[in-house]
Image 1 (tube, helix red, strand yellow):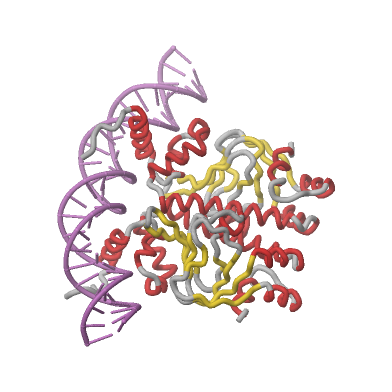
Image 2 (cartoon, rainbow over the protein chains, first blue to last red):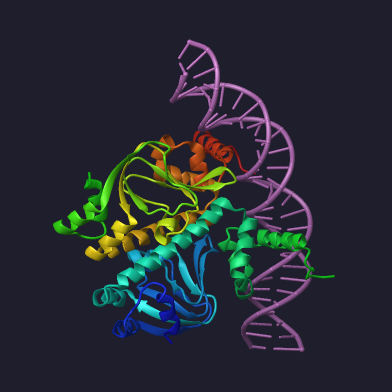
Length: 200
Length: 200
DNA sequence: ATCTTTTCTTTACAATTGTTAATGGGGCTG
DNA sequence: CAGCCCCATTAACAATTGTAAAGAAAAGAT
């Protein structure tokens, strides 16, 4: 149950068996169905989720329209970070895209871990640094790339998500409308001279 | 010389006098003229800068065009983070926009600090978390706002920079061209002056 | 299997931005 | 002080995206 979690944190720090036990005990296992909302707008969340199985997405509500901010895959820590880290009302929603198996750690238990295993500070520092760099990469794509190039890079990096996630969710993540994404897909099919897939 | 630095880190952790001394000693003071490049593309930087006075900007080179990724003000830690944190070749440039007074800490000295004052891990974790949240805010503006709204928010939050920084640098930071930003400015002036005419 | 809902694509039109080029102002330098 | 470079603005045109609506396809529910 904890194998993916250990494999993930091994990239950052080494824990001895005793520390591993303390670390594991801070988490609880939870199964959550598809389309389940873990954090609502306005709510102050005290939970951080490690994804063993499934997909989560963070999204904003813009006048009733859902704009995806991020899609979390297996092996990642997910949360409404602004709310969790600052204990402030969330400005976004966190929801499952599939049935999920999660390892949940609550803020109190994380703070307890900081006391009992201080080197967890190094772990969370490195995770925060990695998330920051990741966020910068995405932001730079908005500054440097056209929507078409952004879609192309998404396909290269997350082609599996095209099959697992509705396209209008991906479109909003790329900062475009589903209509525009459909046009881009059509252009790329024609450009690649691949066999067309719709009516003959 | 260190007063702004102490004031800044006090938001995150408390250091006793001895720790403060160790912390200060890790930095060196440096004056840098306007338009000076601190980090070049491809370079692996080992320095992190705290800005006592002046402005820095991070920018990308896109076929000879300079696209600004971030503008750092006084009281902030600035660096080409991707390069500094991962010790990888920088994909961006870091340059002064004004004559600057900087406090510089090198990677070796930071790592030494992690050993001698372990709670510095907490400080850098919180700084990374804050930078991550800040990056998320900017990213969300690309997803949720039009270029015009993004300009408007920039004016509200950083009106002083409109006077200190050339407009084409701000435009690229907002993800638009100087031409488009000029049109937006014109529209906003007219909107503020002229009352609404009539509806269709 | 049928009905219903959701999702993806297409079309036509409106609106905005990007591109290129020209103008004029401001500041810096010799 | 003149000359020059950088910068902000404006104009005209091309290209792309957004919007709204409709139909087709796929997925889910009963």
